[in-house]
Length: 73
Image (cartoon, rainbow, N blue to C red):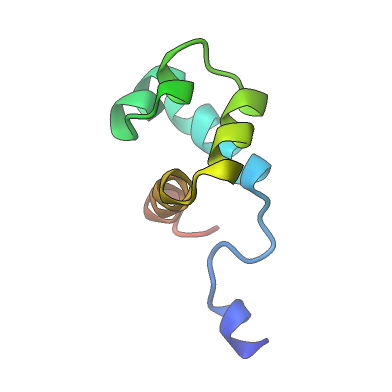
């Protein structure tokens, strides 16, 4: 449990992370930062979540951008 205290993503759902990134960057800028189709072509939270849950490399990029942007706050 001690390691989770230092994990900036601890307690954050993927949906929360994605929603905050979309609010901060907007879909267009998010799609420029992370080039995945679900952010560029007819984006939505639900379709993006579906893709990210099935695609570990894309989820890692989203989580990295979140930590880089918000410092895990």
